[in-house]
Length: 185
Ligand SMILES: O=P(O)(O)OC[C@H]1O[C@H](OP(=O)(O)OP(=O)(O)O)[C@H](O)[C@@H]1O
Ligand SMILES: O=c1cc[nH]c(=O)[nH]1
Image (cartoon, rainbow, N blue to C red):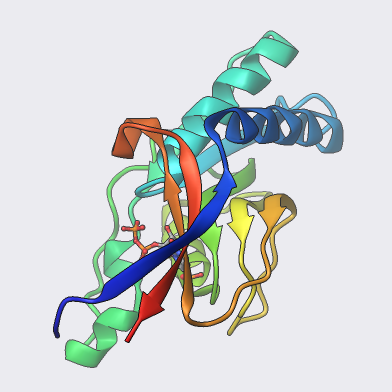
């Protein structure tokens, strides 16, 4: 595989827009979950993790009680591994709290084909039986290949297949912003 050229097309969200969006999503979660006591937040590695941590802190501030926040590493569950041989049957590391009976909100930065979320649901149910599972994403860029939708969406961005959404978060990338870039052949 050669190096792929990409061209920046524009900035979709600044740091302050990301912050405002997360505050709105935290309030939506509290409103829909009637106080959020049974809610557990699970961030998908990598950038879902800081999103879950930030939203957990925001909900805690609004509700004045702690919110369980954990991490899901789905690298062994991704179906794109299956092209190189049988899919490894490995249970991912601990989430950080018991998901059984909880109202789980899975979190990721970008929702595209839906394959990451399918893998995340497999991984989640290997850890326990949640009462419910909802999905939160910062960006929904369309082009689903599976019947998966998010309950909580930061921003819906219609994209072409050539375009790529680059979410950058301070904890992983040293800064907060969302960029739209395009592959150049
Ligand atoms: O809906 P899908 O088609 O599964 O695409 C969405 C996934 O793609 C990105 O991860 P990526 O594979 O680029 O890895 P990253 O964590 O390094 O960004 C993004 O973080 C989502 O997890
Ligand atoms: O555009 C995309 C598609 C999948 N994952 C991303 O992070 N961006």
